[in-house]
Amino acid sequence: MSITAPSPTPLADRTAVPRTWLMCRPDHFTVEYRINPWMHPEAPTDTSLALRQWERLREVYLELGHEVHLIDPVPGLPDMVYAANGGFTLDGVAYAPRFAHAERAGEAPAYADWFARNGFDVVLPEEVNEGEGDFLLVGDTILAGTGFRSSGRSHEEIGRVFGREVVTLELVDPRFYHLDTALAVLDPVAPASGEANIAYLPGAFDERSRQELERRYPDAILVSDADAVWLGLNCISDGRNVIIASRAVGFEQSLRERGYNPIGVDLSELLLGGGGVKCCTLELRR
Ligand code: ARG
Image (cartoon, rainbow, N blue to C red; front, side):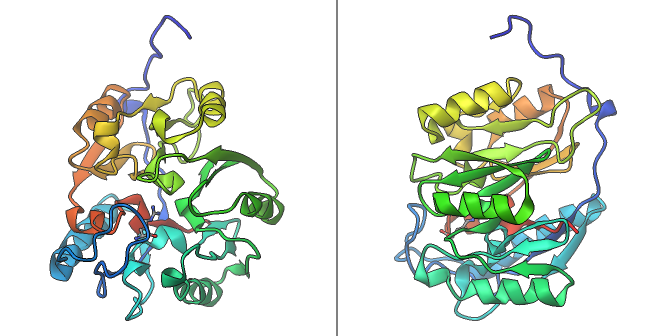
């Protein structure tokens, strides 16, 4: 461990990278089954509140100058709002999902179809994988989560599809069942001053994965359980602005200290389904 604190890049030197996202309006959002510990089908949900909160997130993206595409929500697929699980795109290729739970299986063809109609080469998977929920691109490397949803074999498959290095990370805490609930990519491209950086909750990973993360990202922001339980790590960064759950106040403070500009949003309703900012946002890389 180094004894000097990393000298953070000041906000003035951080530039936002324009990005393109796919989102799905939560017209049919509700919690009617339980496939993660956050979901309580017996508790009421408020679809119109979910819609307003989601609209605000979309507005924030647009106000920051990013591009947002929309996929039509399908009745009977309440989790379709969590677009991050709709696939993983890179170099104009979309690797389609294959959901772990039957309840979400119907989303896979809807997303694959959207990619095909919007100019992506679609690769239909053999292996169980939940898209950007478990695959996060950091620099040229794909960090890949497993343990709850995407299978270890899907890590090999995505490596073959995109020809990139894939680093397997084992998730061990059922509350953080997708990689994007436990780890956030802060720099979509590496800043002039060095490596692309990340933030994560150490306790969400097994020992080997933690060591791998420490070795690769010595300057990572380590986030507390208290921030992670608001799905604070389920955030979106453009390299300058980081859109996060407004209740993750400790993480917000750490981001500020590192020279990022955190922007809080409230997605309390979508948290009832076990998802946050990142879950609602799929990156389109052409
Ligand atoms: N209810 C959804 C599920 O359990 C939430 C998905 C959240 N998505 C994410 N990228 N973490 O599958």
